[in-house]
Length: 461
Image (cartoon, rainbow, N blue to C red; front, side, top):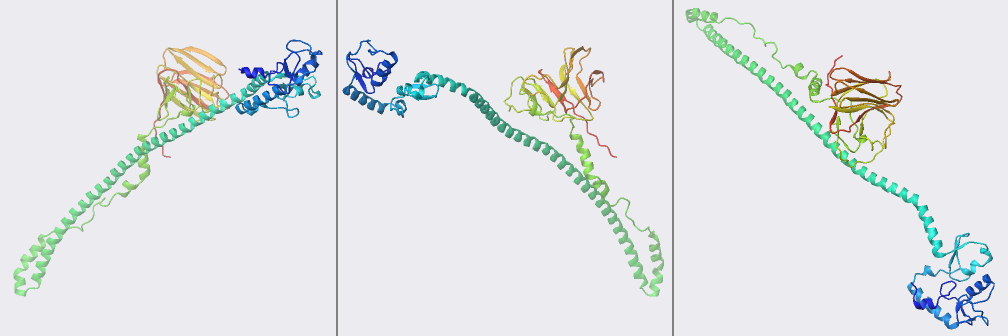
């Protein structure tokens, strides 16, 4: 709000501080340029305020001019300089905005030939109009900025999630190898102990035989020494003792040459033959194979996957996960990690009392409604439906299967579903598949759907 002093120094025509003020005979004051422009426009010389006709030419008021200059100097010290911008051509205050030239002008500029027939607006109106235009021009940039900010936030979340993924995977890998290491360590100890036990037994056997042989050697040596002693005696003494010496030598039966028994040596073939294969063949009993591994990067945030990535359950609560391009954000869906573009494939899914499973093309929409690229069956409470790009078919089941077998023959264009327990056929889709197909498992119920593992066997050809 203007002060009373400022009001006294304000021109009634331009509503600004007087510039070269003049006083009419009726005592009303105006800017010299303002009153002359007003008279030119009205074609009549009268006071713009009281309509009185002046009796003389307006006189410049030096005192009023000095007051205005002092007021402006004082205001200049308190008001930012940009509010006092002046015309470069006429040194007049810029009070209007030329819509044609899109520039600030003074009152003298308005009446000049350079702006003839131009449209003008007061500064506040022009500023408001142009602020609105700038706001409109900024709207798409602000929207783009919001998108970029959301993208950056998602990238930050993705970077954190990558670290979490890395840490969890390292832990799981270490745990798995810890199990393998423990198995190998125990297997190593068992096989080393078996070698040492055989070594101990065969060494003991050889030692016992050696001790028996030593006793035989000692006994024979005693007889030989005694007989040799008799042989060195005089004839009379030798003949007297001959009969006893011969009988002693003949009482000792001659034995066959002692031989090592069969299998006296260590059985190297038993312990070392196919060592790696035998360990691996035994190790297969502690591992299992899943024909389908679920891809957590595709899972809707409300789905929880098991650590081995073979089962999924609908938790209800939405996890804070990156909105990566592969992730479904509308339907509760997770895809298998490996796609198929040829050959035959099969796997069993434990579905419980209700389920939904099938195949999806790699081009299936991940964001928003999924209404194409799917072949799936759905059942709950005895109601059965089959969905494909060609439409929806409904059926009824006398018995709800608990385990469903999925059979894909890509080359023949067949996708079949069977009751895995009874081998009863449920439904078959026929289609000329041309894109990669991924196992598709939605889960909208509070129960676990699990890919069943297969036994590992070894075939030697």
